[in-house]
Image (cartoon, rainbow, N blue to C red; front, top):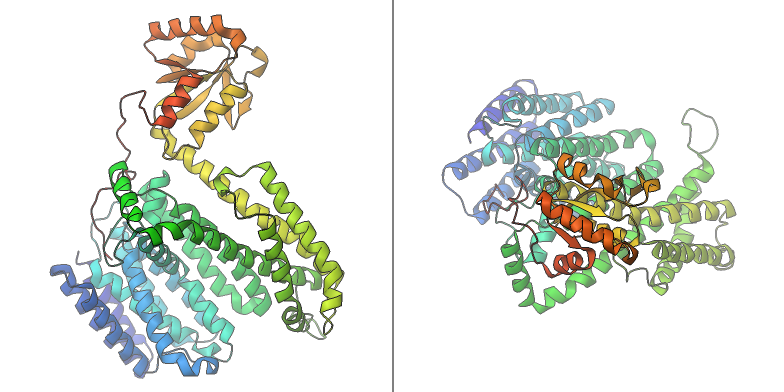
Length: 581
């Protein structure tokens, strides 16, 4: 647990020798030393959460008092509180992120690399040296901390990394202090992964009535493992996410405000959908889940508000989709600007048109989505009728806007082509968000079912499809459907919900032996009653249980086990341990 000593010593030595010799460096080194010592004490003797919080605030105050703060004149009145909140938040975010081998150090290394590229692009060479120092220390430690880890950084390392990165980020964006948009976007993008992880943990623990300071296996990395990835795969996925967020902060300066805002909106939508998908992953075993449900039952206000909060979240996401689609329509209408081309900025009219019409666009589209009961359905059970209803709502909204905008908005002329592009973009984003969420749920079910008893369905008709759909949508997964058998030879190699028909009923013996089938479900039409009896007798000879579809579905929904319980795979069981908070 003493890897933080190496990170602190290596990074501090380099930034002290090569860094900018001014008061900013004094604040960075002094504040980092305060949190390193605090974390080191916590690694040996557990400190109370409020003690660490006070130390983090004190270190942030040292940093801010030495001139490292948000420098935009637009935020002068709240610059110091926002700077302290930023430093404390990112420090805790990296502390929370230190929950799996190589995750915190790798994320710090990626963030430092993108910060270095950004600071070089704005000409801050002295801040770039700080990025290299921190990134080098994190990379050197990562060699020994990547899965399987041989050493851990502890709180001394994670809090030091978070604090130093938050400070360097503020120093790196100081050159853009005149533009509030980039002052806010660049730091948030560079630290996107820690912010996302902290936000998800905070929301879920608040809803579940768990203390925020209590450790647990409910972070992004743990939820990815619960989906079916290995620990190493989960960390690599989060590395890609960290690099994606960092790339947004890096290219924002060259893209300009409007393109950067559009790209940030797209990133935000993807992050919300991915976070919402992972948030529904059950991180408790059945006993713990029942206890958690009982606690929520005893809190009627929280329990009653969860569904309302889900609907409110869906509406908030749709409001973001409206804004992103409308802005994207303007960008596509006017084309991507060429800074080297002579002439006026093609985007110069966008602010006036947005301010004159965006509120009305939001009002019309959100009202029609509500009128068409878009928030009554459950996304995981999305069907074609739901998509048709959403498409009708977007079509009617665009028709109303085409007619109403020229009448209501007199101060700016909105091109009709913008409204047509907006209709196409919004429809694509609205339907795509639902389809993507449902697809992620389907992928999750298939991944989790890999460790469950192997199920063979006899009958690839409507009844067999119903059995398969029951298995695929079960939460948690209880069976893994390995394929179908069907009396009709013409169905061979066809698929139902991506599950293949392996052969005819004559292939039962060979398929059961080759595929290690644990259970056979007979989903045959009544005209095949004699065939079903013969197959049942054959399964008895093979030693494989065989159930009629109706019996299987009834037992499945009643929670009655057909086969002996299977051990949970690594990562799906809740070990009950705690990680660093």
